[in-house]
Length: 302
Image (cartoon, rainbow, N blue to C red; front, top):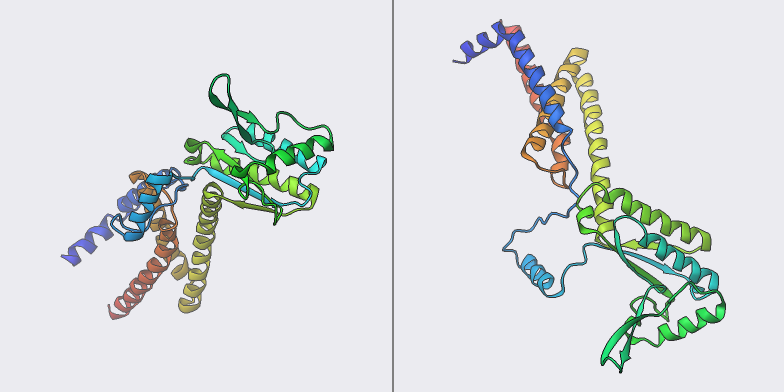
């Protein structure tokens, strides 16, 4: 049977090569549809105890997967210039597309009792951009008197200040999240550079975006690195340019087919699926070496 199969392949090698090229071109086209995953996939099974506890926690307290946190340690945050800059940064972020809400020192509310209507009203602690240091001092006094925000947005002992930016959940699941997150990052860094403070970034939107960008960059890097290393070893062992080119061509086709199948099935590139291309290169080169050795052995025998 194998002899008959080999004869068919050798006799029909031109049509087979044309079919392979056409299928590879189609797979390469579908590979362009493969997208990066911007969600943190759970690697734990649904019945795992840690995941069960986490799901119960989410049902009770909700999920903050759309909140971007910006933290600074500025001892002069209640100085007029610094406070107004923080005020402008808050308004600037709030005007960005994809930002739903911003909570910071300049955008907080106080719960005031309304005796006439017998209800509680929300009043802005900072109704407008302050013009004098006396206004900032008054704002600081009112803010520090509110126990709800104590240690949450401002820590009086460590002088740390926090800003919470709520992002659009629908945008976070698309590629638009990357320019949005990096735009917020850059504007916060410009504030820090102007006043000489260090900005700390956190929150799931920031972590997921950085992780996804790393996966995308490392996927490209490891594919190129694996091909270069495999090519060098093939050239050293076989001392033939053909013995290097054709195995690498085969593994390159296998990578294109793998990415094309991922695109056809509608899967995304994640931390786990990102290792498939370099893994295919290493495994494919190993099998190509076995085939080359078998080919040379049979060639010498016959």
